[in-house]
Image 1 (cartoon, each protein chain N blue to C red):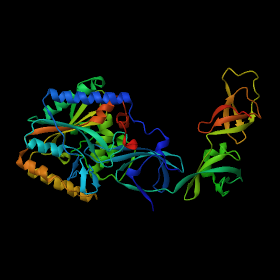
Image 2 (cartoon, rainbow over the protein chains, first blue to last red):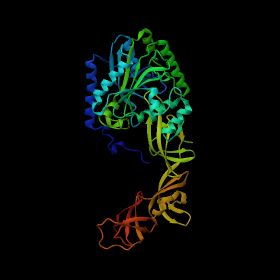
Image 3 (tube, chains in turn cyan, purple):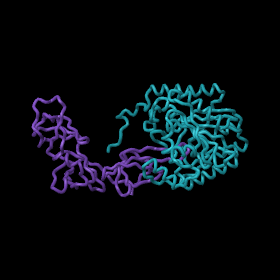
Length: 326
Length: 189
Protein backbone atom coordinates (compact mmCIF):
# COMPACT_ATOMS: atom_id res chain seq x y z
CA UNK A 1 0.00 0.00 0.00
CA UNK A 2 1.38 3.40 -0.97
CA UNK A 3 2.02 5.73 1.98
CA UNK A 4 -0.74 8.22 2.51
CA UNK A 5 0.04 11.65 1.08
CA UNK A 6 -1.76 14.34 3.12
CA UNK A 7 -1.08 17.00 0.49
CA UNK A 8 -3.31 15.10 -1.93
CA UNK A 9 -6.53 14.95 0.04
CA UNK A 10 -8.75 17.35 1.95
CA UNK A 11 -7.35 16.70 5.45
CA UNK A 12 -5.99 20.25 5.49
CA UNK A 13 -9.59 21.25 6.16
CA UNK A 14 -11.00 21.50 9.70
CA UNK A 15 -12.72 18.44 11.12
CA UNK A 16 -15.49 20.76 12.41
CA UNK A 17 -17.66 23.02 10.29
CA UNK A 18 -17.15 26.77 10.63
CA UNK A 19 -20.71 27.03 11.98
CA UNK A 20 -19.82 24.56 14.75
CA UNK A 21 -16.69 26.54 15.60
CA UNK A 22 -18.83 29.68 15.90
CA UNK A 23 -21.21 27.85 18.22
CA UNK A 24 -18.24 26.57 20.19
CA UNK A 25 -16.94 30.11 20.67
CA UNK A 26 -20.37 31.21 21.93
CA UNK A 27 -20.46 28.37 24.46
CA UNK A 28 -16.99 29.28 25.73
CA UNK A 29 -18.19 32.87 26.17
CA UNK A 30 -21.28 31.60 28.01
CA UNK A 31 -19.04 29.66 30.40
CA UNK A 32 -16.87 32.72 31.12
CA UNK A 33 -19.99 34.83 31.68
CA UNK A 34 -21.41 32.21 34.06
CA UNK A 35 -18.35 32.44 36.29
CA UNK A 36 -17.94 36.19 35.98
CA UNK A 37 -21.50 36.51 37.27
CA UNK A 38 -20.57 34.41 40.29
CA UNK A 39 -17.29 36.18 40.93
CA UNK A 40 -15.19 33.10 40.30
CA UNK A 41 -11.66 34.08 39.26
CA UNK A 42 -10.30 32.78 35.98
CA UNK A 43 -6.79 31.41 36.37
CA UNK A 44 -4.12 29.75 34.27
CA UNK A 45 -1.79 27.07 35.58
CA UNK A 46 1.15 25.47 33.75
CA UNK A 47 0.42 22.93 31.04
CA UNK A 48 4.07 21.87 31.31
CA UNK A 49 5.19 20.50 34.64
CA UNK A 50 8.09 18.69 36.29
CA UNK A 51 5.53 16.28 37.71
CA UNK A 52 3.38 13.70 35.96
CA UNK A 53 0.04 12.16 36.76
CA UNK A 54 0.22 9.38 39.33
CA UNK A 55 -3.27 8.11 38.49
CA UNK A 56 -3.09 4.59 37.07
CA UNK A 57 -5.57 5.39 34.29
CA UNK A 58 -4.24 8.77 33.20
CA UNK A 59 -1.02 8.69 31.20
CA UNK A 60 1.08 11.83 30.92
CA UNK A 61 2.87 12.81 27.75
CA UNK A 62 6.58 13.38 28.11
CA UNK A 63 8.15 16.44 26.56
CA UNK A 64 11.81 16.92 25.81
CA UNK A 65 13.84 19.34 23.80
CA UNK A 66 17.30 20.85 23.51
CA UNK A 67 18.46 22.33 26.79
CA UNK A 68 15.64 20.98 28.92
CA UNK A 69 15.15 18.08 31.27
CA UNK A 70 12.19 15.80 30.61
CA UNK A 71 8.94 17.48 31.58
CA UNK A 72 5.29 16.41 31.40
CA UNK A 73 2.11 17.87 29.96
CA UNK A 74 -0.68 18.03 32.52
CA UNK A 75 -3.54 15.55 32.28
CA UNK A 76 -5.63 17.92 34.43
CA UNK A 77 -4.92 21.24 36.14
CA UNK A 78 -6.42 20.10 39.45
CA UNK A 79 -3.30 19.81 41.57
CA UNK A 80 -1.95 23.23 40.55
CA UNK A 81 -5.38 24.77 41.11
CA UNK A 82 -5.51 23.32 44.61
CA UNK A 83 -2.14 24.90 45.27
CA UNK A 84 -3.71 28.23 44.35
CA UNK A 85 -6.63 27.52 46.69
CA UNK A 86 -4.21 26.70 49.51
CA UNK A 87 -2.45 30.00 48.77
CA UNK A 88 -5.70 31.91 49.29
CA UNK A 89 -7.01 32.42 45.76
CA UNK A 90 -10.65 31.97 46.68
CA UNK A 91 -13.07 30.50 44.11
CA UNK A 92 -11.34 29.81 40.80
CA UNK A 93 -12.00 28.35 37.38
CA UNK A 94 -9.87 27.46 34.41
CA UNK A 95 -10.48 26.59 30.78
CA UNK A 96 -7.48 24.79 29.37
CA UNK A 97 -6.15 22.11 27.09
CA UNK A 98 -5.04 18.93 28.85
CA UNK A 99 -3.14 16.05 27.34
CA UNK A 100 -3.78 12.34 27.85
CA UNK A 101 -1.55 9.81 26.14
CA UNK A 102 -3.30 6.96 24.37
CA UNK A 103 -6.81 8.42 24.52
CA UNK A 104 -8.15 8.50 21.03
CA UNK A 105 -11.52 7.51 19.64
CA UNK A 106 -14.93 8.69 18.63
CA UNK A 107 -15.35 10.52 21.94
CA UNK A 108 -11.71 10.99 22.91
CA UNK A 109 -8.93 13.16 21.54
CA UNK A 110 -5.44 13.10 23.10
CA UNK A 111 -5.60 16.84 23.70
CA UNK A 112 -8.92 18.04 24.98
CA UNK A 113 -10.43 21.12 26.56
CA UNK A 114 -11.29 20.90 30.23
CA UNK A 115 -13.23 23.30 32.41
CA UNK A 116 -12.13 22.96 36.04
CA UNK A 117 -13.60 24.93 38.89
CA UNK A 118 -13.39 25.02 42.67
CA UNK A 119 -15.76 26.51 45.19
CA UNK A 120 -14.80 27.17 48.79
CA UNK A 121 -17.18 25.95 51.44
CA UNK A 122 -19.48 24.19 48.99
CA UNK A 123 -20.23 20.55 49.60
CA UNK A 124 -20.77 17.93 46.93
CA UNK A 125 -24.49 18.59 46.83
CA UNK A 126 -24.16 22.33 46.34
CA UNK A 127 -21.51 21.96 43.66
CA UNK A 128 -23.66 19.40 41.84
CA UNK A 129 -26.44 21.97 41.74
CA UNK A 130 -24.07 24.50 40.23
CA UNK A 131 -22.90 21.98 37.61
CA UNK A 132 -26.56 21.37 36.82
CA UNK A 133 -27.17 25.11 36.43
CA UNK A 134 -24.22 25.60 34.09
CA UNK A 135 -25.00 22.54 31.95
CA UNK A 136 -28.67 23.47 31.83
CA UNK A 137 -27.68 26.90 30.52
CA UNK A 138 -25.36 25.41 27.88
CA UNK A 139 -27.56 22.48 26.82
CA UNK A 140 -31.04 23.92 27.39
CA UNK A 141 -32.31 22.77 24.00
CA UNK A 142 -31.40 19.13 24.71
CA UNK A 143 -32.90 18.85 28.18
CA UNK A 144 -36.52 17.78 28.56
CA UNK A 145 -36.49 17.21 32.33
CA UNK A 146 -34.62 18.33 35.44
CA UNK A 147 -31.45 16.43 36.40
CA UNK A 148 -31.77 13.04 38.03
CA UNK A 149 -29.49 12.14 40.93
CA UNK A 150 -28.80 8.49 41.56
CA UNK A 151 -26.22 6.68 43.66
CA UNK A 152 -23.57 4.49 42.08
CA UNK A 153 -25.10 1.53 43.86
CA UNK A 154 -28.61 2.30 42.65
CA UNK A 155 -27.40 2.87 39.09
CA UNK A 156 -25.79 -0.58 39.04
CA UNK A 157 -28.86 -2.17 40.59
CA UNK A 158 -31.23 -0.47 38.15
CA UNK A 159 -29.27 -0.86 34.94
CA UNK A 160 -26.94 -3.84 35.47
CA UNK A 161 -29.02 -5.79 37.97
CA UNK A 162 -26.27 -6.16 40.58
CA UNK A 163 -25.06 -4.55 43.78
CA UNK A 164 -21.55 -3.27 43.01
CA UNK A 165 -20.62 -3.38 46.69
CA UNK A 166 -21.67 -7.01 47.19
CA UNK A 167 -21.12 -8.68 43.80
CA UNK A 168 -18.07 -10.89 43.23
CA UNK A 169 -16.00 -10.46 40.06
CA UNK A 170 -17.69 -13.59 38.68
CA UNK A 171 -21.13 -12.10 39.30
CA UNK A 172 -20.04 -8.87 37.65
CA UNK A 173 -18.83 -10.83 34.64
CA UNK A 174 -22.16 -12.65 34.50
CA UNK A 175 -24.02 -9.31 34.64
CA UNK A 176 -21.87 -8.04 31.78
CA UNK A 177 -22.61 -11.10 29.67
CA UNK A 178 -26.30 -10.87 30.46
CA UNK A 179 -26.39 -7.40 28.89
CA UNK A 180 -23.56 -7.45 26.36
CA UNK A 181 -23.07 -10.56 24.28
CA UNK A 182 -19.31 -10.28 23.90
CA UNK A 183 -16.13 -12.08 24.76
CA UNK A 184 -13.61 -10.11 26.76
CA UNK A 185 -9.84 -10.20 26.46
CA UNK A 186 -7.47 -9.30 29.29
CA UNK A 187 -10.19 -8.01 31.64
CA UNK A 188 -9.06 -8.55 35.23
CA UNK A 189 -11.13 -8.80 38.41
CA UNK A 190 -10.57 -5.14 39.27
CA UNK A 191 -11.70 -3.98 35.82
CA UNK A 192 -15.31 -5.14 36.00
CA UNK A 193 -16.79 -2.07 37.73
CA UNK A 194 -15.39 0.26 35.04
CA UNK A 195 -16.45 -2.07 32.25
CA UNK A 196 -19.97 -2.40 33.64
CA UNK A 197 -20.28 1.34 34.16
CA UNK A 198 -19.14 2.24 30.66
CA UNK A 199 -20.77 -0.58 28.69
CA UNK A 200 -23.90 -1.50 30.65
CA UNK A 201 -24.92 1.37 32.93
CA UNK A 202 -23.96 4.44 30.86
CA UNK A 203 -25.69 3.39 27.62
CA UNK A 204 -28.93 2.81 29.56
CA UNK A 205 -29.07 6.18 31.30
CA UNK A 206 -31.98 8.40 30.26
CA UNK A 207 -31.25 10.46 27.15
CA UNK A 208 -33.44 13.48 27.89
CA UNK A 209 -31.86 14.82 31.08
CA UNK A 210 -28.64 15.15 33.00
CA UNK A 211 -27.91 12.27 35.33
CA UNK A 212 -25.63 12.64 38.33
CA UNK A 213 -24.14 9.46 39.72
CA UNK A 214 -23.00 9.94 43.31
CA UNK A 215 -21.39 7.99 46.14
CA UNK A 216 -18.70 6.16 44.22
CA UNK A 217 -16.95 3.27 45.99
CA UNK A 218 -14.03 4.34 48.19
CA UNK A 219 -11.68 2.40 45.89
CA UNK A 220 -12.55 4.93 43.18
CA UNK A 221 -12.31 7.97 45.44
CA UNK A 222 -9.45 9.46 43.41
CA UNK A 223 -9.03 12.91 45.02
CA UNK A 224 -12.36 12.95 46.86
CA UNK A 225 -12.67 12.65 50.59
CA UNK A 226 -14.52 9.68 51.99
CA UNK A 227 -18.05 9.97 53.32
CA UNK A 228 -17.95 10.89 57.02
CA UNK A 229 -20.73 8.41 57.83
CA UNK A 230 -19.72 5.54 55.58
CA UNK A 231 -16.03 5.15 54.70
CA UNK A 232 -16.98 2.67 51.96
CA UNK A 233 -18.20 5.65 49.95
CA UNK A 234 -16.37 8.54 48.36
CA UNK A 235 -17.73 12.10 48.06
CA UNK A 236 -17.40 11.91 44.31
CA UNK A 237 -19.96 12.45 41.57
CA UNK A 238 -20.11 12.27 37.82
CA UNK A 239 -22.51 13.90 35.38
CA UNK A 240 -23.80 12.14 32.27
CA UNK A 241 -26.07 13.02 29.43
CA UNK A 242 -27.38 10.34 27.12
CA UNK A 243 -24.62 7.96 28.12
CA UNK A 244 -21.88 10.51 27.57
CA UNK A 245 -19.69 11.26 30.60
CA UNK A 246 -19.50 15.03 30.97
CA UNK A 247 -18.14 15.88 34.39
CA UNK A 248 -16.36 14.47 37.41
CA UNK A 249 -16.49 16.22 40.76
CA UNK A 250 -15.20 15.82 44.30
CA UNK A 251 -15.71 17.14 47.71
CA UNK A 252 -11.97 17.54 47.93
CA UNK A 253 -9.70 15.51 50.13
CA UNK A 254 -7.78 17.99 52.28
CA UNK A 255 -5.95 15.50 54.51
CA UNK A 256 -2.28 15.46 53.52
CA UNK A 257 -1.43 12.08 55.08
CA UNK A 258 -4.39 10.38 53.41
CA UNK A 259 -3.53 12.03 50.08
CA UNK A 260 0.05 10.81 50.34
CA UNK A 261 -1.14 7.26 51.05
CA UNK A 262 -3.36 7.39 47.96
CA UNK A 263 -0.54 8.64 45.73
CA UNK A 264 1.69 5.84 47.03
CA UNK A 265 -1.07 3.30 46.37
CA UNK A 266 -1.49 4.70 42.84
CA UNK A 267 2.22 4.46 42.17
CA UNK A 268 2.17 0.87 43.42
CA UNK A 269 -0.78 0.11 41.10
CA UNK A 270 1.10 1.70 38.20
CA UNK A 271 4.13 -0.43 38.92
CA UNK A 272 1.99 -3.57 39.13
CA UNK A 273 0.56 -2.89 35.67
CA UNK A 274 3.96 -2.18 34.19
CA UNK A 275 3.45 1.58 33.88
CA UNK A 276 6.29 4.00 34.54
CA UNK A 277 6.42 5.58 37.99
CA UNK A 278 7.03 9.22 37.23
CA UNK A 279 7.70 12.07 39.63
CA UNK A 280 4.49 13.24 41.30
CA UNK A 281 3.79 16.80 42.41
CA UNK A 282 5.34 16.97 45.87
CA UNK A 283 4.45 20.68 46.08
CA UNK A 284 0.79 19.65 45.97
CA UNK A 285 1.37 17.67 49.18
CA UNK A 286 3.17 20.67 50.65
CA UNK A 287 0.12 22.79 49.82
CA UNK A 288 -2.16 20.31 51.59
CA UNK A 289 0.22 20.47 54.55
CA UNK A 290 -0.13 24.26 54.56
CA UNK A 291 -3.89 23.82 54.43
CA UNK A 292 -6.40 23.41 51.64
CA UNK A 293 -9.65 25.11 52.69
CA UNK A 294 -12.74 22.88 52.59
CA UNK A 295 -13.96 22.99 49.00
CA UNK A 296 -15.50 21.07 46.15
CA UNK A 297 -14.22 20.97 42.61
CA UNK A 298 -15.31 19.59 39.26
CA UNK A 299 -13.92 19.06 35.79
CA UNK A 300 -16.16 19.25 32.71
CA UNK A 301 -15.22 17.92 29.28
CA UNK A 302 -15.91 21.00 27.21
CA UNK A 303 -15.58 19.27 23.83
CA UNK A 304 -18.32 16.84 24.81
CA UNK A 305 -20.61 19.64 25.95
CA UNK A 306 -20.07 21.27 22.57
CA UNK A 307 -20.83 17.93 20.89
CA UNK A 308 -24.18 17.78 22.66
CA UNK A 309 -24.99 21.44 22.06
CA UNK A 310 -24.27 21.01 18.35
CA UNK A 311 -25.93 17.60 18.01
CA UNK A 312 -22.68 15.93 16.97
CA UNK A 313 -21.80 12.33 17.73
CA UNK A 314 -18.04 12.53 17.21
CA UNK A 315 -15.57 14.69 19.06
CA UNK A 316 -13.68 15.40 15.82
CA UNK A 317 -16.75 17.30 14.56
CA UNK A 318 -16.35 19.94 17.27
CA UNK A 319 -12.56 20.35 17.15
CA UNK A 320 -10.96 22.65 14.59
CA UNK A 321 -8.55 19.85 13.82
CA UNK A 322 -8.81 16.47 15.51
CA UNK A 323 -5.59 14.59 16.18
CA UNK A 324 -5.72 12.80 12.82
CA UNK A 325 -5.49 16.23 11.13
CA UNK A 326 -3.37 18.00 13.73
CA UNK B 1 6.12 -12.97 15.71
CA UNK B 2 4.60 -9.55 15.11
CA UNK B 3 2.02 -8.31 17.58
CA UNK B 4 -0.27 -5.32 17.75
CA UNK B 5 -1.21 -3.45 20.91
CA UNK B 6 -4.79 -2.25 21.26
CA UNK B 7 -3.60 1.31 20.70
CA UNK B 8 -2.63 0.30 17.16
CA UNK B 9 -6.10 -1.10 16.48
CA UNK B 10 -7.85 0.42 13.48
CA UNK B 11 -10.23 -0.87 10.87
CA UNK B 12 -8.52 -3.05 8.30
CA UNK B 13 -5.91 -4.42 10.71
CA UNK B 14 -5.50 -8.22 10.48
CA UNK B 15 -5.15 -10.03 13.77
CA UNK B 16 -5.18 -13.59 15.11
CA UNK B 17 -7.91 -14.60 17.55
CA UNK B 18 -8.39 -18.16 18.81
CA UNK B 19 -6.23 -19.47 15.98
CA UNK B 20 -8.14 -17.80 13.14
CA UNK B 21 -7.28 -14.70 11.14
CA UNK B 22 -9.62 -11.76 11.64
CA UNK B 23 -10.04 -8.34 10.09
CA UNK B 24 -10.89 -5.43 12.39
CA UNK B 25 -14.07 -3.87 11.03
CA UNK B 26 -14.60 -1.30 13.77
CA UNK B 27 -12.62 -0.18 16.78
CA UNK B 28 -14.14 1.96 19.51
CA UNK B 29 -12.14 3.38 22.40
CA UNK B 30 -14.15 3.34 25.63
CA UNK B 31 -12.85 4.91 28.82
CA UNK B 32 -14.36 6.44 31.93
CA UNK B 33 -12.42 9.67 32.63
CA UNK B 34 -10.80 8.30 35.76
CA UNK B 35 -11.10 4.64 34.90
CA UNK B 36 -9.71 1.76 32.90
CA UNK B 37 -9.72 2.02 29.10
CA UNK B 38 -11.15 -0.67 26.83
CA UNK B 39 -11.26 -1.26 23.11
CA UNK B 40 -14.54 -2.52 21.80
CA UNK B 41 -13.90 -4.12 18.44
CA UNK B 42 -16.00 -5.65 15.72
CA UNK B 43 -14.01 -8.30 13.88
CA UNK B 44 -14.68 -10.44 10.83
CA UNK B 45 -13.37 -13.99 10.65
CA UNK B 46 -11.57 -14.07 7.34
CA UNK B 47 -12.19 -17.78 6.87
CA UNK B 48 -15.89 -17.91 7.68
CA UNK B 49 -16.96 -14.30 7.19
CA UNK B 50 -18.62 -14.36 10.61
CA UNK B 51 -18.60 -11.05 12.45
CA UNK B 52 -18.24 -10.89 16.21
CA UNK B 53 -17.65 -8.28 18.86
CA UNK B 54 -15.01 -8.40 21.53
CA UNK B 55 -13.89 -6.11 24.30
CA UNK B 56 -10.18 -5.81 25.02
CA UNK B 57 -8.65 -4.23 28.06
CA UNK B 58 -6.57 -1.46 26.50
CA UNK B 59 -2.88 -2.24 26.47
CA UNK B 60 -3.40 -5.92 25.63
CA UNK B 61 -1.52 -7.26 22.64
CA UNK B 62 -2.60 -9.69 19.95
CA UNK B 63 -0.66 -11.59 17.34
CA UNK B 64 -0.68 -10.08 13.86
CA UNK B 65 -2.22 -12.24 11.14
CA UNK B 66 -0.04 -12.68 8.07
CA UNK B 67 -2.85 -11.82 5.70
CA UNK B 68 -2.58 -10.00 2.41
CA UNK B 69 -5.09 -9.14 -0.27
CA UNK B 70 -3.81 -9.51 -3.79
CA UNK B 71 -5.42 -8.91 -7.19
CA UNK B 72 -5.40 -12.06 -9.35
CA UNK B 73 -7.00 -13.10 -12.57
CA UNK B 74 -9.42 -16.04 -12.53
CA UNK B 75 -8.34 -18.73 -15.00
CA UNK B 76 -10.47 -21.87 -14.71
CA UNK B 77 -12.05 -24.45 -12.44
CA UNK B 78 -10.73 -28.01 -12.75
CA UNK B 79 -13.64 -29.53 -10.89
CA UNK B 80 -11.89 -29.39 -7.51
CA UNK B 81 -10.16 -26.06 -7.31
CA UNK B 82 -10.37 -22.60 -8.80
CA UNK B 83 -7.14 -21.41 -10.39
CA UNK B 84 -5.95 -17.83 -10.36
CA UNK B 85 -2.93 -16.08 -11.84
CA UNK B 86 -1.04 -13.01 -10.75
CA UNK B 87 -1.31 -10.67 -13.78
CA UNK B 88 2.31 -9.48 -13.54
CA UNK B 89 4.34 -12.34 -12.10
CA UNK B 90 2.14 -15.01 -13.78
CA UNK B 91 2.40 -16.97 -10.57
CA UNK B 92 -0.56 -19.32 -10.25
CA UNK B 93 -2.49 -20.33 -7.20
CA UNK B 94 -5.37 -22.73 -6.52
CA UNK B 95 -8.21 -21.90 -4.14
CA UNK B 96 -10.40 -24.64 -2.69
CA UNK B 97 -14.15 -24.62 -2.21
CA UNK B 98 -13.90 -23.35 1.37
CA UNK B 99 -11.93 -20.32 0.25
CA UNK B 100 -14.08 -19.57 -2.77
CA UNK B 101 -17.43 -20.12 -1.08
CA UNK B 102 -20.31 -18.11 -2.50
CA UNK B 103 -17.97 -16.19 -4.78
CA UNK B 104 -17.95 -19.23 -7.12
CA UNK B 105 -21.21 -18.19 -8.74
CA UNK B 106 -19.66 -14.92 -9.93
CA UNK B 107 -16.31 -16.15 -11.20
CA UNK B 108 -15.88 -15.51 -14.90
CA UNK B 109 -12.68 -16.37 -16.67
CA UNK B 110 -10.23 -13.47 -16.92
CA UNK B 111 -12.00 -11.31 -14.34
CA UNK B 112 -9.70 -9.79 -11.73
CA UNK B 113 -10.58 -10.91 -8.20
CA UNK B 114 -9.15 -10.17 -4.77
CA UNK B 115 -7.53 -13.25 -3.27
CA UNK B 116 -6.97 -13.13 0.49
CA UNK B 117 -3.87 -15.08 1.44
CA UNK B 118 -3.17 -16.21 4.99
CA UNK B 119 0.35 -17.54 5.40
CA UNK B 120 0.39 -17.67 1.58
CA UNK B 121 -2.69 -19.91 1.40
CA UNK B 122 -5.90 -18.55 -0.17
CA UNK B 123 -8.67 -18.28 2.42
CA UNK B 124 -11.12 -16.00 0.65
CA UNK B 125 -11.98 -14.83 -2.85
CA UNK B 126 -13.76 -11.55 -3.51
CA UNK B 127 -15.19 -11.17 -7.02
CA UNK B 128 -15.21 -7.77 -8.75
CA UNK B 129 -18.04 -5.55 -7.44
CA UNK B 130 -19.60 -5.54 -10.92
CA UNK B 131 -19.53 -8.42 -13.38
CA UNK B 132 -20.82 -8.76 -16.92
CA UNK B 133 -22.55 -12.09 -17.43
CA UNK B 134 -24.41 -13.80 -20.25
CA UNK B 135 -27.90 -15.16 -19.55
CA UNK B 136 -27.96 -18.87 -20.38
CA UNK B 137 -31.41 -19.79 -19.16
CA UNK B 138 -34.59 -17.79 -18.56
CA UNK B 139 -38.25 -17.73 -19.54
CA UNK B 140 -38.95 -16.16 -22.92
CA UNK B 141 -39.00 -12.40 -22.84
CA UNK B 142 -42.23 -10.43 -22.85
CA UNK B 143 -41.75 -8.12 -25.78
CA UNK B 144 -42.36 -4.48 -25.14
CA UNK B 145 -42.82 -4.99 -21.44
CA UNK B 146 -40.27 -2.50 -20.14
CA UNK B 147 -42.47 -0.62 -17.76
CA UNK B 148 -44.32 -2.97 -15.41
CA UNK B 149 -41.30 -3.58 -13.21
CA UNK B 150 -41.90 -7.33 -12.93
CA UNK B 151 -38.93 -9.67 -12.64
CA UNK B 152 -38.07 -13.30 -13.40
CA UNK B 153 -35.08 -15.47 -12.50
CA UNK B 154 -32.29 -15.76 -15.05
CA UNK B 155 -29.43 -18.22 -14.84
CA UNK B 156 -26.08 -16.77 -15.88
CA UNK B 157 -23.07 -18.41 -17.49
CA UNK B 158 -21.27 -18.64 -14.12
CA UNK B 159 -24.21 -20.37 -12.43
CA UNK B 160 -25.57 -17.35 -10.55
CA UNK B 161 -29.32 -16.84 -10.66
CA UNK B 162 -30.28 -13.17 -10.88
CA UNK B 163 -33.69 -11.49 -10.86
CA UNK B 164 -33.98 -9.63 -14.15
CA UNK B 165 -36.72 -7.60 -15.90
CA UNK B 166 -39.25 -9.61 -17.90
CA UNK B 167 -38.12 -8.37 -21.34
CA UNK B 168 -34.63 -9.93 -21.19
CA UNK B 169 -33.82 -12.96 -23.36
CA UNK B 170 -31.38 -15.84 -23.24
CA UNK B 171 -28.05 -14.85 -24.80
CA UNK B 172 -28.20 -11.25 -23.62
CA UNK B 173 -25.46 -9.93 -21.33
CA UNK B 174 -26.22 -8.11 -18.11
CA UNK B 175 -24.32 -6.20 -15.45
CA UNK B 176 -24.71 -7.47 -11.88
CA UNK B 177 -23.56 -6.18 -8.50
CA UNK B 178 -21.90 -9.17 -6.80
CA UNK B 179 -22.22 -7.66 -3.31
CA UNK B 180 -26.01 -7.61 -3.47
CA UNK B 181 -26.70 -9.99 -6.35
CA UNK B 182 -28.76 -7.24 -7.97
CA UNK B 183 -29.27 -6.74 -11.67
CA UNK B 184 -27.89 -3.32 -12.64
CA UNK B 185 -28.74 -3.16 -16.33
CA UNK B 186 -28.03 -4.54 -19.75
CA UNK B 187 -24.36 -4.60 -20.59
CA UNK B 188 -23.38 -2.38 -23.46
CA UNK B 189 -21.30 -4.25 -26.03
